[in-house]
Length: 352
Image (cartoon, rainbow, N blue to C red; front, side, top):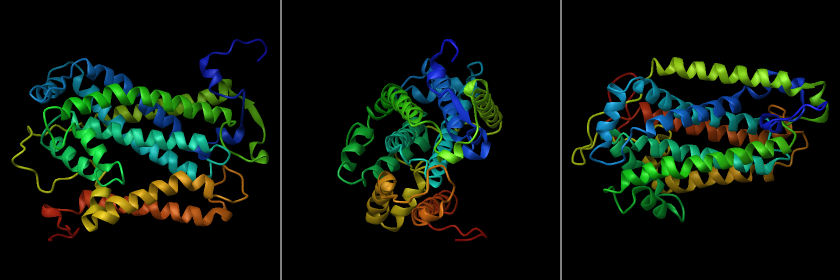
């Protein structure tokens, strides 16, 4: 680089970038958007960490204090809440984009790290959902832990690990807090670093040799594009935090569960499947989906290079993947908005 001293950010990028990579439609910016959300989560989470108390007798009051009394506390909590949910959405969209463009070709390990990050994201959102320790979070953790119990082989152990026992007890909230702030952040840093490292070692965005075309220096062209996406994402997070506030419900009451009791929105699709069949909805379907995602790079025998949207010789894999995505979205929508008391189907045009 003409004697120029390279810094850490330089080492995360190649020295040249193709014009195709700078095209917004090539990646849709989901990866940078997810990283921006993760950085926002870390900063706001550190602030909340200084004021939160993971004791069941004081957690609810601390959340109220942060939300109503602490200067900028409501904004920080809202931004943390919005960023966490947006991070999950952007991560899922990033995975969809990578799959439909066969971006895993020649970079299977990078794909595995990405799946690991998505799993950590689900766990982080779930443990964070518990921390307000209000009526909704109390019963949501009960439902969520029950759903985890359906996982093959390790389900019961995972359920007991989350609850810190056979059922919700005095150690449940401290356990969720320890996982949320002690275990998951280092794992996020490690897996994110490995994911970016493998992406860099693989040559950046997947594309055929012809698709790479003309190239430009990364500095400033790619840096400007990434900064623009990051700033736009953060601006949207701030805007959303002014309209959508992190909820705080009444104090938890173990004797009076809400009706219906629902898992957090990202697990309510599984809850809907379980309502039809505990075995198929709670065990077989999630297992088959996870197996398909893990094995997809090895099952793909197409000759088209990675980086192409909807390659014709991958139509079977793409069709299976789209059926999985659309079906899970459908289950989520039904479970979240079309289920009433006692999990009875709520017709959209009134009545039960």
